Length: 351
Image (cartoon, rainbow, N blue to C red):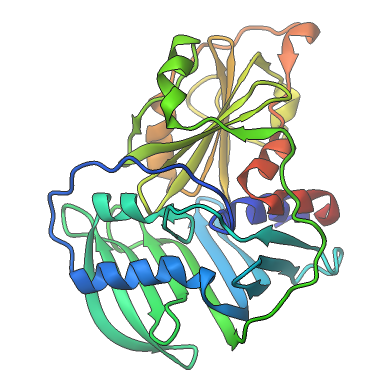
């Protein structure tokens, strides 16, 4: 895996660190969750605001490209946020970023809104186990057909999420895993750090203006395949592009829309698909880029490939025509990475 791809991986893999989110609209829940399972997940969502720690975390994803992994060292102060360093990168020693403590009241588990997780899946308590020398509880998320969607290992003493596994729709194939290999609980501490690397010019739009955006010609579907729900909207005031955030509580995708026509040079290294004019790159995260109706779409997320394809097909698509130089518009992938988390600002350091 190249260092530039690792930079993009970091920007999405740690999306749960310190990002503000709007209130999540929750559909009606028809299934019965285990109260104990819900309580443990609520505790896991709140733990980073109460517990300081340092540890080593590995994130792995499986897909058509094979397995992709990255290792991070995290020093977390509950009152401030997390200093995250990329490990195993000899050409970029010391590459790190500080991600500020979240100010939102919306609970999230590893980047997925807890309210959507509870609405989409049945949550069951699987009792106790041991992990990295700590006593943990195991919680599972089941789909409507009772196949396994995810497993969560939660530290019994602190409530911190120790490990999360995500599975494809067959309930057996693991597609993503996040786990601590080392974890040390710290007392309350203060981190000396550089200012948080925040994306400039990005403002929260909120869900209340979605209808107005639709009237202006933006495509902002409330629901997508794979049970994804729209829960947040941001805008880059420098160029007017929009970010629509979707989740089912486990998997997360961001859809970026920008007026213009895609520049083919911006997707160099991407693979073509069966759909003309649609380009993709699998990994952590996966990217799909296309242009339609005067809008460039960039979809970034951690969905399994089959579900990612279903999501892409839910949007408008034009057959591409020849482009003049003045019509071409880059998709701004490097800048988009900074939207996902401040970790995207590591891109220059990582290559």
